[in-house]
Image 1 (cartoon, rainbow, N blue to C red):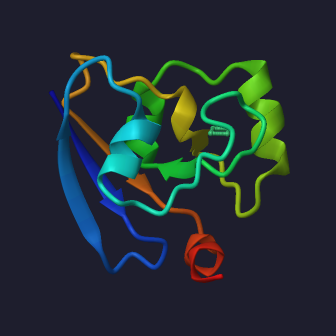
Image 2 (image 1 turned 120 degrees about the vertical axis):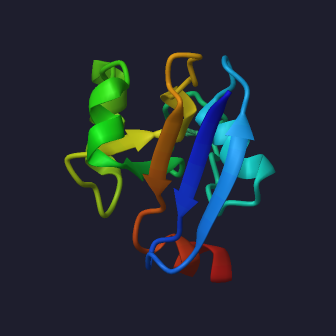
Length: 111
Ligand code: FES
C-alpha cells in the first residue's frame, strides 16, 4: 500500500488515500474525486492529468519517458517536479507519495 496525499492547488485542502501497489495514480485520484480530467485515459495525448509531485517523492519515481516530457511541455503551470498522473504506477516500495494539483485546475472544473 502507498499512502497517497493529494494537496489542492491552493494548498488548503489535503486528502489522504491508501492505494494498492500496481495501481495507477490517475485512477486513484479520480476515484478520490480529485479534479484531474485525464481526458485521453493515459494515451499521453492530453496532459489534463498533470500533477506536481513533492520534491523528495519525485526523486523516488522512475524517470518520465520522452513522450511524457514532450506532453508536459504543453501543459500549463509546469514545474520541475511535474508529472502525468497516468504515467505513475504505485509500487510496494513507495510508502507515501504527495502530489499537488496544478494551479488553474479548479477553473477548468468550474466551467
Ligand atoms: Fe491524458 Fe494522462 S490522461 S496524458
